[in-house]
Image 1 (cartoon, rainbow, N blue to C red):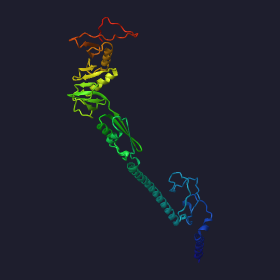
Image 2 (tube, helix red, strand yellow):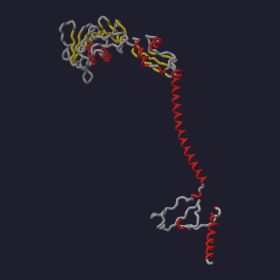
Image 3 (tube, rainbow, N blue to C red):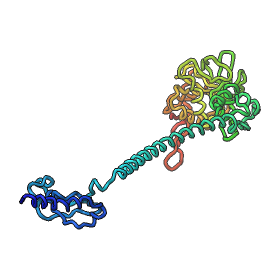
Image 4 (tube, one colour):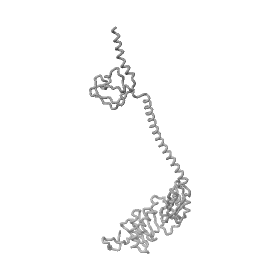
Length: 379
């Protein structure tokens, strides 16, 4: 009989717990709860409730030895509120996953669009270059005017025709170097030509006509040569210095003069340039049969023996001073200037005449001249 009340007490004790478990979630949130120091300290009969938007209280007491979260380390304060897994519903998780996925997809699409834009720019640049090149070769830079200057012997039409440049031709396709060579090689009295493009539609041609400088004797023929070394014509070398013993290699009008003997090709120009620097005029001929025994004939009566090509300018300056001061206008003499320290003058009418001719006395420091002890002197 005493067992019945015990069973009744047991059922009465369980009723509040079941009734509390069946309460709605909204009513349970309003029930105050005491904070617990640890999860292990909670009563077994109580259910876990979400701690949404609440920060768990941190106890200043040392962690219990049996607490696995401490394990001998200082307990760190919670940096953000702890939310229970029950607070996030399945629909919220699904929405969050969808948002993250959409954001990653959009970022990827933005990157791919940026790469596509670069390709578009490159393609547009290539197309623009192709269009420009086509227009430049067909419409934009067509030759509309050809201007020729520096010509006296030849007409502008002749020079333009020989250059190979035509009106309406694109300036970009014109080879200026080829046009210059065509003009110089086709016209004997043109020493140099310059072809210049003046955008957008003009071509300028500037020519330098050849100047007769000396003649070269080649057997029975004499070729006229310009300052640029170009053969201009044949057998018309009157009033020009004539080079003897040059030994011309394949002479032809319009070509550059050359000698078949090494060292003679540039020698006439060197001698004539030195004579111009020394202001020595009236050279009739230059004999370079032996290039180490050069002989220059002045006014057809004065022979200058220069030896080799060393100190040509100094030797010709001495010769000019002797001709102006010591040699009369009727004398036929030979002046030996192979050594600038000793100059000898011989009269061509006297055989084996080795008497030195008088030279100009040297100047003193005050600008006066010293008189020589005799009528002869050596330099």
